[in-house]
Amino acid sequence: MDPLEMDIDERIAAAFEKIAQVSRILLWEAASAEKLSPIQLQFLLHIDGAPESLRRVGAVAREFDLTPATVSDALSSLESKGLIVKETSEEDRRSVILSLTAKGRKTVKSAEDWKSSMIDTLRAFPGERKEMVMEFLTGMIASLFARGILGSARICATCSNLVIMEGKTAPRFVCGITGRRFDESGMMIGCATHSAR
Ligand code: SF4
Image (cartoon, rainbow, N blue to C red; front, side, top):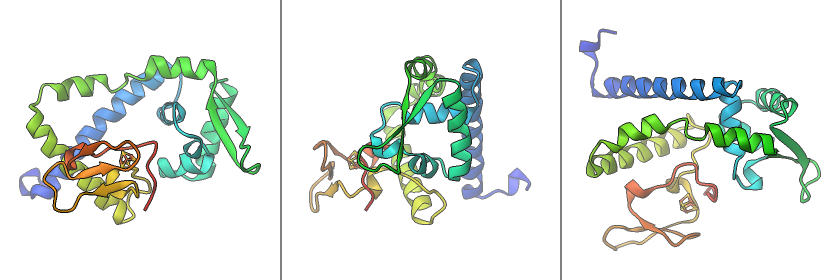
């Protein structure tokens, strides 16, 4: 399509593609430095510090919108590299829980700043504009999740712990777990204590 004929929605989608491209490049660079594939590094970053419920094979597959078979292959490779261990859940003996080994934690430590150049770039923009962007992006993620295009959102807008203070002035949201008050721009993304509605 001729870029001159793109409407605002098509140009926003094109801009998302560019940002996603930067994200892919940064992740690829960080993963290569650790001799991993990008998805293997993403799994390690996900497992690090996640509660047990998010460290099951099925939960990892949901989080990344992948099939359990694809996830299992990448996890077996991480296990053979000595970066994760698979343990049987004490609550449910049929369930496998993933944990980082000391070597896996070391790998996460050296790769965890993979998006720092993106964050540094964002720091140069004024706070007010970023709050508007954040409000827009959380709304966009919630819509994609509601339409079934995104399999896992784990954002406040889809969380049963979110309390909406009707009739109150901003900030009108409260997290039922932490008690934190916030407005649309303060919504968490990828929250470990998210509970689906
Ligand atoms: S538990 Fe997490 S996702 Fe849910 S409302 Fe609190 S901060 Fe938001």
